[in-house]
Length: 478
Ligand code: BG6
Image (cartoon, rainbow, N blue to C red; front, side, top):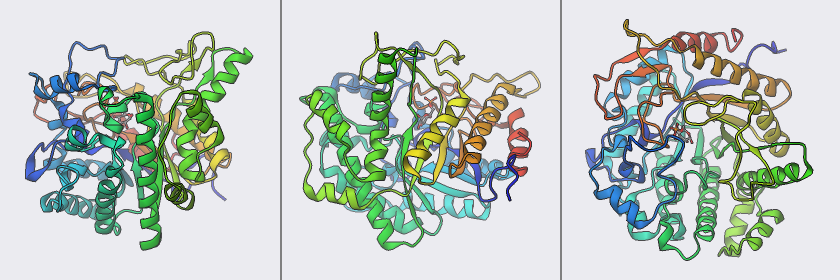
């Protein structure tokens, strides 16, 4: 019988990154531009404001042609330095690394006739090297890296033609890497259409008649594309697993008032919606009512609904960072409305830390879906400062990670099937939301600043040894 203080023997500890935040190598070896490549660093922007969320043509034009520094074009030079990073992860005994393939390395414009050989070769080498180092890749097929061409000229995910372009790209990398990769997460944080709308759906708000409707139409196309790839995996490769990913956004009622409890319930259910469709195979009635109430009409065919019904995903990947509350006197069904929780402490970016919320949400996901689950992201973003002797004493990150791992272990002990923990991000990379380098998550400090300057030295923070020991003791030292 397993010791309840230890994680299960086949549980994988590791980290998670995304191609666009780490690789750099902009334009190199034939890579095309993605949404991420035109996200500027805005030093004076409010850290709590995601300036890259809803996008119109004018802002996009300014971002493309303005005089800006674009951090994601450099990333942390993972494209050229991947061996150094993988070596460090191997030294930490990481068993897995969740990473994404950049669509624009493989199809630079998203819809090219032929794939880019050099782009494929990069991932050939990377996966081979990871294999030598015993680190299993978990791959996200699309992590906020939609080809810019498809946005400028094809309307992004709102155009049904993207389903086939995405399918062709997904199929190609599944065929090529199925021997290295068992777990495939098809779309990063599919539910985050209120915070990362542009990055995930690539819709320009002024180019569509009804923005809300366009978002859900685009989501429908992501559902169809996911079902098609899931079908392909199941029909062609024994043992491959298709995953749906949610950024946990479940809320608590601000008070025990019945109105707060009811609105919280309805809001949470619209977050479950995405996984309800992809894991249970149907648009639920509450979602159809939501669309009706909000004048949202989605075009779908019976064949598409049948495809979704017959090809449900195998596992749920969850990212978890913070939690908020709902006050029915101020908030509505609009996911952008919520209140901070006065009982929690937030970081500089307004992300309120709540480890027990991770126990609750993972247990709830388990009770609802009964499919294997993994933590695809969880971490503490902080402006770490090097001490004069070149060290980072990040006890705050150790405390954060310990408390969240304890919450996961408790959920496992109460029955949840959780097979991996991928800390975001095991080495510092460019932030997704604000494109800063100064919002650091790593156990490994990467010496580049917000303008990509620095010698790029990799420095083990205090949390590096701590995480290594946790992995080696399978959590028994928590
Ligand atoms: C998730 C994204 O939303 O949060 C990651 O999938 C991202 O890409 C992570 O990096 C942390 O957000 P940020 O803005 O602090 O980088």
